[in-house]
Amino acid sequence: MRHIMIINAKGGSGKTTIATNLASYFASQNKKVTIVDYDPRGSSLDWLSVRSSAKQPIQGIAGFKRNAEKPQRKTDIAILDVPAAVHGAELTKFVKKAQTILVPVLPSPIDMRAATQFLAELKKSAPVSQKKAKVAIVANRAREITNIAWELDEFLSKQKIPYLTMLRDNQNYVRAAERGLGIFEMGPAATAVDREQWEPILKWIKSKRSQP
Ligand SMILES: Nc1ncnc2c1ncn2[C@@H]1O[C@H](COP(=O)(O)OP(=O)(O)OP(=O)(O)O)[C@@H](O)[C@H]1O
Ligand SMILES: [Mg+2]
Picture 1: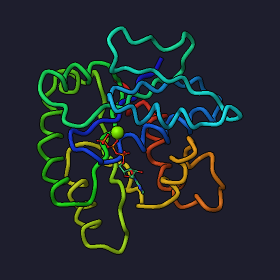
Picture 2: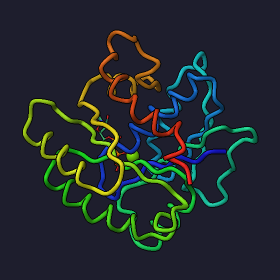
Picture 3: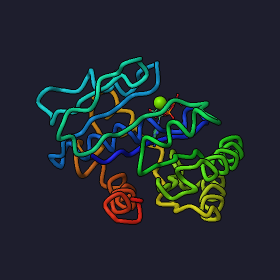
Picture 4: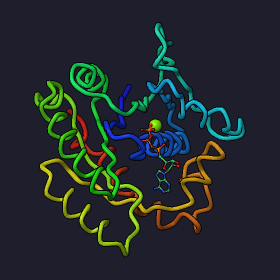
């Protein structure tokens, strides 16, 4: 079973959005997917609760609970949605759970400064420094014509961690979230730009570069 974690200590950077879209993508590819929600607010589980039973099933686990159940046997991919404000020993404990880690970052000075600190901490954590887990960054909620989007692009390009893509700020993500879907399960024409922006994430996850 593959474990893919979405993490950033900064709140609201898009962890749950990326986790749910990734889960829905792999489910739509007929993979057996589990989403483990470590956030006691349970946003990923809420998303799953409105998902139609006509769609490919995704198992949901309340990872924040003591004695949380385990992913079903034969699960291909477990997507781990981690809450904000995770640092120090707790961060290392989380990072040990995954082989592949995605860090979403928003185009804002506050988020970029926080990302500098978080990425430094992440790189120092034992699983990452020992290459037992591979990390990549994703810019999220970019409005393309804005200066701050380009500043974020430049900032992330300078990190010594693969910078995969820039996802736009778009209502498709909001509409998908309302329905327990991902953009890959919505109309191909309306989501064409988003699908294209996701391509480097999927390519990286499918490549050996994202695995220890
Ligand atoms: N690319 C996007 N386009 C439009 N809205 C987005 C996008 N990404 C995230 N959002 C919205 O931004 C808000 C925060 O996103 P999300 O909940 O995924 O962040 P998070 O990192 O999981 O937050 P938390 O730290 O609170 O768990 C949500 O309302 C979500 O719908
Ligand atoms: Mg979240």
